[in-house]
Image 1 (cartoon, rainbow, N blue to C red):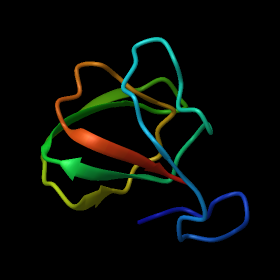
Image 2 (image 1 turned 90 degrees about the vertical axis):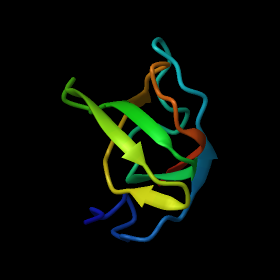
Image 3 (image 1 turned 135 degrees about the vertical axis):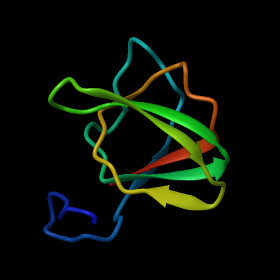
Image 4 (image 1 turned 180 degrees about the vertical axis):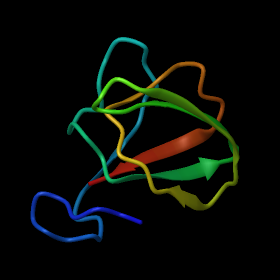
Length: 83
């Protein structure tokens, strides 16, 4: 389930391509979900500091998580942060 964004919407009003990084947070901050263009694992960091690996996320899906960082151990490709 997507949580409302800063405008109170649950739909994405903005988006940004993701370059996985162990150092840099997502360019627009905390996202409401991640579009996955190429299947694989996604290693995400939450705004509370928890890390999780989402295994075998299929291509063409939206992972409904709020994340501040996507780590370089991620194998999924063509990721887009939804805001």
